[in-house]
Image (cartoon, rainbow, N blue to C red; front, side, top):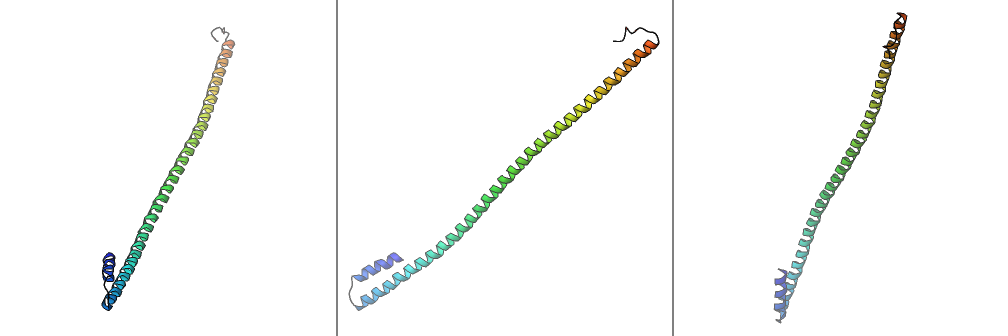
Length: 136
């Protein structure tokens, strides 16, 4: 539309006279109107594009933040799991040491009781007048 107005303007500029001048002014007004319409349409179009881009950027930022939060939560969960594993290993170690202590105490007790029983048998045998050759 703008190109047609300019070509019409150039064609009329070759003519002379009052009617030609009037036509020239009309065409000039048409050119100005077409240009201002183009500018206003472009302004509206660019505002629409800016709005779309703002929505797009806002969504992208939300996705990025969501990704960052997910990564942070994954890292936190991983660190928590690692700490729990370390704690469990410590607890297992303490429980193992306690079990070992109990086993050794039980073994010591059993060995002591066996020693007492052996000594009692020796004393009984000696009291009965038997020889202690069979006792080790």
